[in-house]
Length: 89
Image 1 (cartoon, one colour):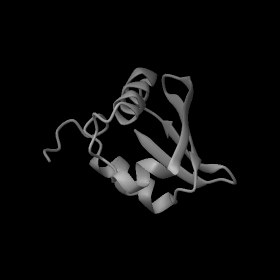
Image 2 (cartoon, helix red, strand yellow):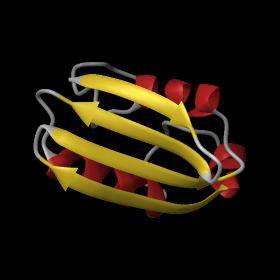
Image 3 (cartoon, helix red, strand yellow):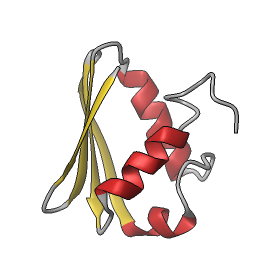
Image 4 (cartoon, helix red, strand yellow):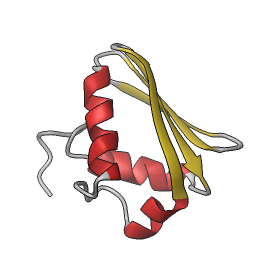
């Protein structure tokens, strides 16, 4: 799976390509929205006003709205248990 993270006028866009299933990105967003993830700090979570997933398997886009930096999102993705299932804590 490849991840391309871009800063936009509204926040941050992440384009996932390659071996990525849309359901995994949706699950990651749901976990984040319900507080079941520990991949980003509470401070970063508070900055995000909206999360939207679109696309299809192999080409999934995640748009995050809010005053969040590309670096904060890169760090969160590196800690995501959904994207990195073999990574412990």
